[in-house]
Picture 1 (tube, rainbow, N blue to C red):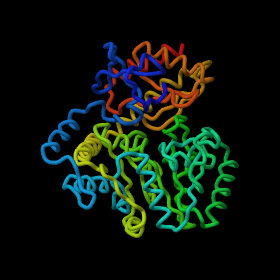
Picture 2 (cartoon, rainbow, N blue to C red):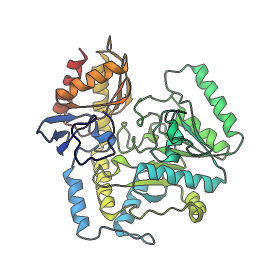
Picture 3 (cartoon, rainbow, N blue to C red):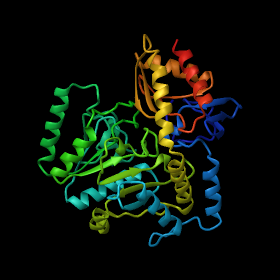
Picture 4 (cartoon, rainbow, N blue to C red):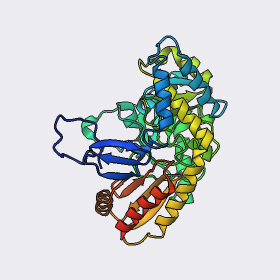
Length: 401
């Protein structure tokens, strides 16, 4: 499956394309009326199920009050959501920047980091995804992978991601090399996902202690740590936020996707007020539609549901079950199963096998996507009923054979 960002007047079946008709909970239907069990959550967006009725009701109620905010002021629902969101995060993260997407949020965090530190360099990690504008592309894109877009943004570049399959010697080598870069004291920020790559689709899991060591080294040399939780936030990995797996408090955290459960466009940078206040005047932190009141109403309800229902526990339990079932089928076609919570990668022997099985599942009514080449990314709604999880899993397993 490819991402479609262009809408045609008459698509005529070009490319991999799902003409969506309606969606409810963990089910979607195409315009021919075919039903699919969804194992994508629109790429970690509809974590509480498609068109969650509680969220929809919250939008309707807010629409009766006000739907647009001010650049130079705030609506009560914006203030209420900021209080709730910061209350769900470590106390040090006490202020929010209003944005409309994950890309905007990461770009805003970069601007803040450069202004605050007076440095220009930004370090990311290979094959992590942070967005599709020039700075966010530069953070994680492999060099020369899209040469016609280059040059991207100077002084922003990725380094190798230390996943959990590397040796202890390679881990120590990585730490030495990273410290050598930071010791020059010209790096404004290190940006990373919190221990698992959700973006470009590899679902590689970080070496244990990855985030702890980043926090330690960044603080030592005056570099800010920015954690991109656009794909991992809101219970996806078995914690409300991915930073909780290692108990790390970054300087800034970027959020979007599951923030409103797909009900409205919204993003945020949540960080330390002392950093934001120092950088505010020169960072140009303005967004016309950032935190539209209806988006905040939806996001507030989403957060309340996660906290009320402890949705992260659902993700951990269902994810563990799904991984264990799939691991028993590792063999000729399936070679690895990895992930956290309900962010799972099923890696096949080659890209052709992965694509063939994905298409077979699609034909059988399972909507699942190929993350990158040989890796199928499995991301059901966290609220998926056990019977639909079982039905979808059985379709996948049947096609493995």
